Length: 65
Image 1 (cartoon, helix red, strand yellow):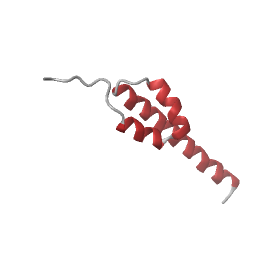
Image 2 (cartoon, rainbow, N blue to C red):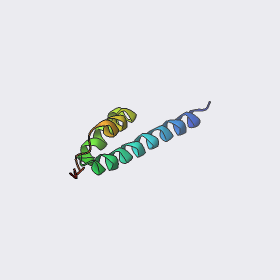
Image 3 (tube, rainbow, N blue to C red):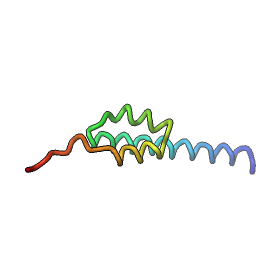
Image 4 (cartoon, helix red, strand yellow):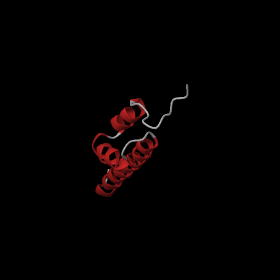
């Protein structure tokens, strides 16, 4: 593998990780949480942040009795 191919693969990895962080920020905002904070968390822990966002309770949900 050439040096250029190695750099291209690394660049794709970072683009994917950044995209996941953006998606996590949107998910977090949809659940009533701070998107910027979750974006930053996602940059460090990636898919684990997605799991946490999905598992945590929705702060926007309204109860109908």
